[in-house]
Length: 198
Image (cartoon, rainbow, N blue to C red):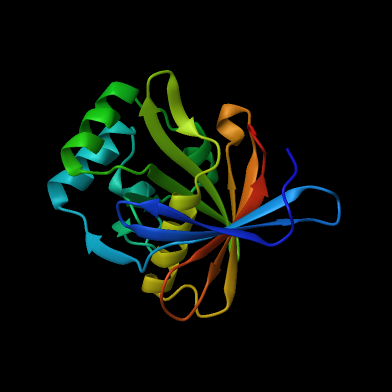
């Protein structure tokens, strides 16, 4: 299947229409760009945060103090945790059924997003999505949009910033997503696309 340059199509979701643009790259690949709905953010309930940390084998001291835990909506609700230590980020484990139960109870239709800042504007991400045999998602556009919104709300990022998000290494499918953060409104996420059918 070939993809024409600069093809645009709306994607109807429960949160509203999402604009998706595809374009051909110089190397012959395909890049997709998705712009989220206008985001919103809310605080964790203390008990919910304690439960989530416990399910991941984490403690409050594992969190990066610069990035307070929040729940972010960019079409789906994504809880976001940022860990200060790279080793803890790479090595934490979780029991998928228990995380799935908490996701359902809290209405988190998106992934549970766990981050570590590798460098300025460069984050490692693990997106927990226990569903059947799947435990972590290798590339999550909606979560990348939530990360961009979270970083704007927190004051880390400003209009025009681009955030690199490396995801999928823990499930053997490394990916790179880019969140483009405007001063206001939805977050645009860029990434390579793979055709899956006619």
